Amino acid sequence: MQLTDFDTDLFLRDYWQQKPLLIRNPWADWHNPLDPDELAGLACEAGVESRLVTQAGGDWKLEQGPLAEDRFATLGKSAWTLLVQAVDHHVPEVAALIDPFRFIPNWRIDDVMVSYAADGGGVGPHFDQYDVFLVQGLGQRRWRVGPLCDHASPLLPHDDLRLLAEFEAVDEWVLGPGDILYVPPRFAHDGVAVGDDCMTYSIGFRAPARTELMAHWCDHLLAELQEEDRYGDPGLARQANPGEIGADALARLHAMVTERLQDRDAFARWFGEYNSTPKYPDVDWEPEQWIGADDVRDALSDGQPLCRNPASRFAFIRQAEGVLLFVDGETFDCTGDAAALAEAVCAGDGVTPGADLSDRALDLIADLVNQGSLAFGEED
Image 1 (cartoon, rainbow, N blue to C red):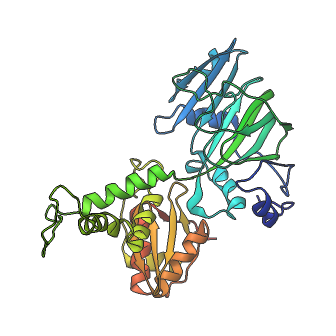
Image 2: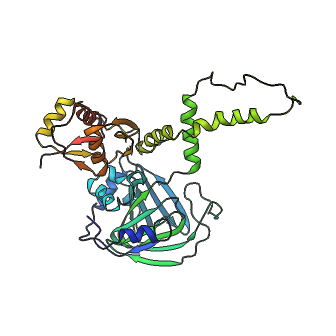
């Protein structure tokens, strides 16, 4: 599916991270990519992150999955919402929903959360710290959007849900199948199902917090430092008052901290690995049988395309010679045709390279297949 009635440049200029936008069915041919029963089935699986939100008389409750198969039969006519995270990792048709939004760099993309709600169901007025495209799949949902919020915005007392204590809508729309609502970070919003069989696809984006970057970057640096890397002051001169921390000492101490923090090349390599770490790193995607360069050459000779694992994260940083490729937390230094291959793999979900690749490129493909990030598909 592709967006056919959408001005990307206008959107990036006037709306991205600035203000909400309602986009009425811009698809050439919209069709809902996931059956509600399939979504319910995913919510019952142990390896899938899911939540069930119910409300009655202003009382909100949250249940963490996996859910029992008979749980949905007990909900009756209550207002409830099922939320399943990272459905794109499990359903290729849902993963395809990300493609039209790749005018935002891939490293910013998080996942596709899918919600199903009964009449009146929702998760309450709230705000997020990230951008989101809310694509209506089935049924209708009434969205109300309020003003910007921040850490000082009052919340209702609740252990599991961050619900706004005060919410006043400034815009309101009812979305039908194929309609899209874009909501930038920190804008208050509230979506309520209008009728049953309401499915919404939330394409969310990542926005690292400054605290997150600083903490993890410093943790990485600390792990590399040696105990003997200590302050030194050879050539120390006598000072008038021994109680003073002198300017020279302060300069040396400050440099000890800032020199490593300001290593741009080291930061780039660290961030590529950190940002490409899978959302669920404990999940093992490795194939049952590993392959080698000869196996790769044979598969390419047969015309088999390479397909990316939807759960994998790919990115690269360009260098003077070649690129640094980051895949699922691992770094690959690529030059020549391996660099060209790395860029091609990062550009889309699939690529069909020729069989006349260098040994370096063949080894790269084998490494990515063996770690579960790439797989060979069927011959066209």
